[in-house]
Length: 239
Length: 239
Image (cartoon, rainbow over all chains, first blue to last red; front, top):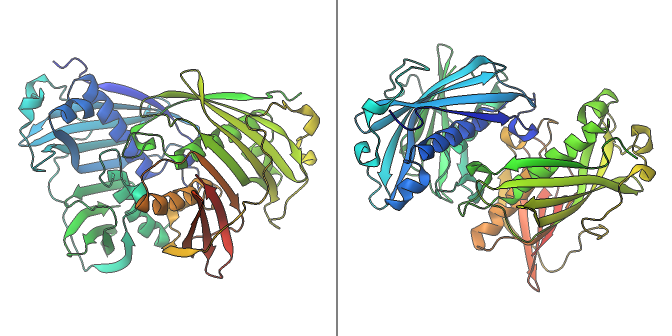
């Protein structure tokens, strides 16, 4: 087994983690999940700094999250996370979010290790990431593939990538893509999301211009961000 | 004296609190200071919820901050804050940020209590906010007036207010204005800010369009955000 087959991390929800209803925002949930993933990876010696030494870095490729109840300002939440296994080049990691001992959200996520120079995925085994060592419990049993897509796209907005959208990797942070999509969603809707699935496909860079595109079919929202070359940046399905 | 003449709060710097150099960002410092202000105000029964019951809310009007050393990812910092006194309709609150026991940043800030309906300032005394009760030590002895302005303005950017820029008060959060200014600053410069002074003058609302304008004189940067009517939204002086 791994040294730390799972990690449990505590967070107190701050005012700035919440929206105008005092509920934890989905971009902040993405930040928190990522923070826990990094902490647990680091404890097991395949974290940010370990990979950096080997000229590599983690990227989140796909994630599906179900939220039953949004934690609120001042709540003390607990996030449990564990690497669940390997699927080809993907490392799978699951999450549970607890509020007062009750599971309020669950997620499953697929990650790649990319080479800093070539930006190509590397085999996981060389980073001490071995399927047999994992705690195989499911937070969600769902297997993630490509986000399906239905309907006709309508372009909602055109935006630019700013300095503050970048993270410590100098990439647009995952949570930023989620924030951009919710900016469009909440300009029309009012109800919080209960299911959110996203594929990260192409990277945006500082000063890039991109469009936010939407389709709505059978009570499901589909969003696609597209870069200047009209290539899909990320694809979202949400309810 | 007040029940809690000062408050001391601890934070662990998360990856998403930092920039691409792993240093705590200035917008996050604004979030943290605001969080501490709210906590200490609440402990003294003139906090967010106390004011809400009286149809009123706090707004930050002016703040000056000096940063000697930016805390980094994974640092455990401590913020000490106290209401320092009253200047007319302004409540003055000072801050010290400690990293490993050493003061790394200091700030002084001027706040108003506004009426929810009229948006006009209210007298502080009716909110149990009485000068005589305060801990009068200075983090910074500086008295804040209007940010002075020098030079000719150049328009750098035109942007829009999105849903994610709003806070629990449904206003654009202070930290958001700071973020917009740094987005422009860091598109040209590389060096972190050591002194930052801002006046908040006019509120922006969801979907508002605004411009970012700059002047640079004698090694000092001046920024002004302007709304569609060309009215100053906020004014910044920074080094």
